[in-house]
Image (cartoon, rainbow, N blue to C red; front, side, top):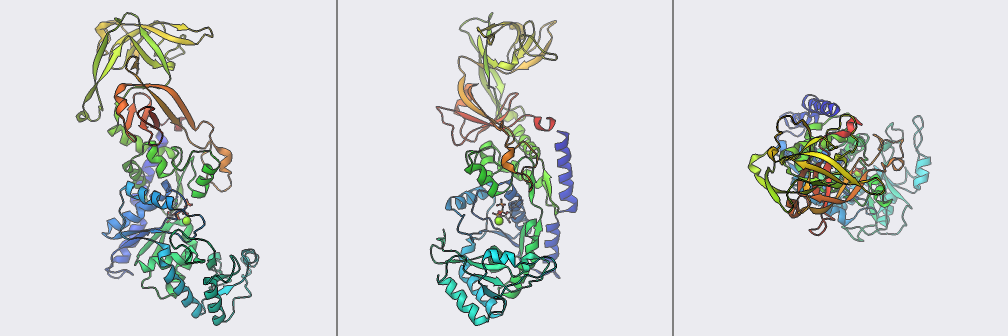
Amino acid sequence: MADIEENKIEAASDSASAGNFIKSEIIKDIAPDGRFAGMEVITRFPPEPNGCLHIGHVKALCIDFGMAEQFGGRCNLRMDDTNPTKEKQEFIHSIENDIHWLGFEWSNYCFASAYFDETYEYAVELIKKGLAYVCELSPEQVHEMRGDYNTPATSPYRDRPIEESLDLFSRMKNGEFPDGAMTLRAKIDLASGNWNMRDPVIYRIKHETHHQTGDKWCIYPMYDLAHPIGDALEGVTHSLCSLEYEDHRPLYNWVVDNVSVPSKPRQIEFARLNIDYTVLSKRKLRRLIEDKVVSGWDDPRMPTLAALRRRGYSPAAIRSFCDQIGVAKNSSTVQWGFLEYCLRNELNENATRAMAVLNPIKLIITNYPEGLTEQFEVENNPQKPESGTRTIDFGREIYIEADDFMEVPEKKYFRMFPGNYVRLKGTYIVKCTGCKKDEFGNVTEVYAEYDESTRGGNPSEGMKVKGTIHWVNCGTAIDAEVRLFERLFDIPDPDSANVDFMEHINPNSLTVLKNCKLEPSLANARPGDGFQFLRLGYFCVDSEDSSPEHLVFNRSVELKDSYSKK
Ligand code: ATP
Ligand code: MG
């Protein structure tokens, strides 16, 4: 817990002092002597629709939309669909949905592919200026001839006449050549210390149907060409992206400086969000799905927005997390526990309280009248008196957690054991009198006697009561399945480059409990509804598998950060 608090304070001061350095840069840029003096601030979020958004993307979203909002500008959504191979319509819908769910509203919405015509024309412009050429080296040959720090790269096609490149490029477009036969390369600097500037490929042949443009194109621009052009065509002023694009910035600038685009946007990079015990890469997340480690993009153990939503996270909790981690320039790893801390804070305020027993055992109150059922008024949420009260039933037979009874108590065990007094939450104090066991020695029933004068939970003279336990009335309890989650990985850094993340799956990441007993008020819970189950944590109704006939709850988060302690 202490770690989490420190983490929070560190993060908060980071965002306050080092600032939002992006914000400072924008302020300079729009000042009267700045490069965008008097202009509206326009940003964009450019997801590639080859997977669902994850919590890392939320950081980018908060920065892109947040900056536009702070400066009274606009943020566009642009699907980066330059690689038709891996992209899918389902991901496009899921991305749109996630962005709206978080509460962001884009200004202009389009696809990088909407600019394929213009992008092609700008490529032709580059060839005409002697700044691009058609190269017939295979990817392997390009790799072999890329040189090293002391030796420049080479290509025998670099000095091919402009007319020849123009002709070949147009024939590439017309489908005369197979995939990989040739590429268009920018003619920049074969000796550059920056590999991205060593005549990067800017167009390649791919005979593939595109989800937006169909079969119109068989050549596709690379991101490094399409992205600055898209930005410039949309009048984006600030193209904000994560740090791995820093080495691409010289190429970004080279493109906007060398083609006749209507504006010259500025790229600024920020640190990627890393979180411990998870992986934030669509490629790795896809692998987890393909190898059936998880059930899909929305498996509640995944770091995707679809999964977090299913797990019971609200947009407010997620955005609060992003606000607090701030916008730093240097990469750092945030604890998953901090995300949970943000969720817990919110649920503590807002979640309705209820009682549920996950591993039930029957407690029989032997001196309680048979057939009697009493009603007790309890608060729905002590944090919010306005949320009212509800009645819970109490009777002679109730369920308690199996581990709230020990025939022979261990040290400091204050719950049910023969001779001990225990408070049954909200009702009476009972004295445990014993238990019944089956032929294998397993406890099958627990017995106790109640004291009528303790109604409301107040001990009578001389009673020592240290434990309070939750319970559910047998007569009216409803059945449910409850799913408990732990970290998906068993090491803090499964995402680091030298680790095989598939070798570090936590075998206990999912526990399914099929025989849980809930108080009857939960029968009306709808998918997504969140509750605090007393002593057990925060839970929500599963949006995929739950139905009125078969309720399924997910544990969103435990009441305390037990993980840091371990
Ligand atoms: P992944 O590696 O998960 O596939 P990506 O960068 O390829 O991520 P994109 O769809 O291209 O995914 O990302 C859209 C935007 O989100 C980019 O501008 C990228 O900088 C940003 N982004 C992606 N991951 C993170 C992260 N972990 N932290 C911050 N920003 C991120
Ligand atoms: Mg990408």
